[in-house]
Image (cartoon, rainbow, N blue to C red; front, top):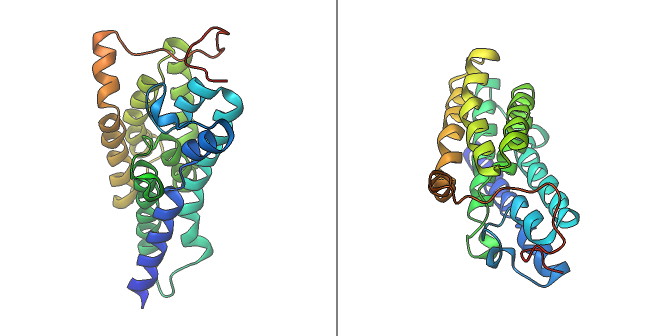
Length: 217
């Protein structure tokens, strides 16, 4: 019974992570699929690039929220009889399920985003202080380079260092998760890395130009 309970929670986390806010906002309010414009990614950055901040900010907030909410399922619907240590592993499983749901969403043909926002949301539930420091690194790199991909990659690589050496986390599951993030984020940005090396990666502009052809009315 306990195993069934855990499996159901993980399934719920995956379905929650699968909610494709970027795709649905684009289709419902603008009549387009953002995966067919801009970078082709179903994430908040591409929504901002294609549709602007009015659409992109809610998408970003929701992607973070669903990652946080997925992990919190273990707190609000606790599995009976689990120790604190095992509960931590369940929360890690829920985080992974939500991220996989975002990257491979069942509702829209398993073609989703890169998972950065959802990972951040799950991280807020599991490593709140570490995520604040990672966010600071992300913002500093973004402000200085204007590359969202590079900011995400460097922040993810810094994440396990912050968790292990600065936060002093000793739980093997949490350490493993932080290391997985440092591998997963760069892996989902392989094309971006290639464009960065070639000098072809597009910079993120904080203010959209009026004549930008990628911004659809």
